Amino acid sequence: MKKSTAKTSGKSVGKVAHFYDHISVAALVLKAPLAVGDTITVKGRGKEFTQTVASMQIDHQAVTKGKKGEDVAIQVDQAVKEGDEITKL
Image 1: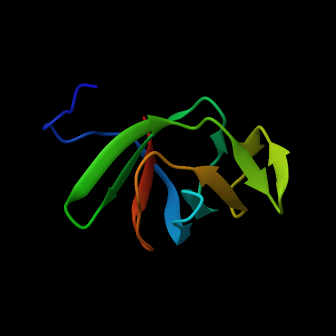
Image 2 (image 1 turned 45 degrees about the vertical axis):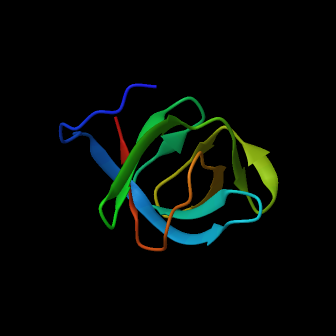
Image 3 (image 1 turned 120 degrees about the vertical axis):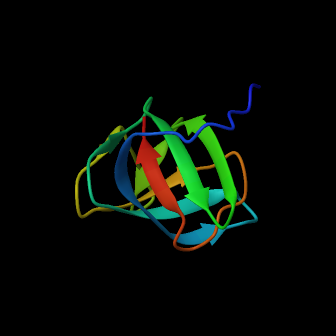
């Protein structure tokens, strides 16, 4: 996996509201649409990583996309913290 040191650009789609470390799931509050298959960057507190959204749930039901204003849960590759910014590439 190639790690980029350059600043990534993209559209901010939301923030992490909560992280469930025992299952590596982040609860997000969306301020723009997000879909399974989108590539996102998670940024916060000096840490940044990029991943593809492999699955998404709303109220414990699998969905393929979330709309602005919805709360969604996604599996994440690394630990995140409340308030981390989610950007869609």
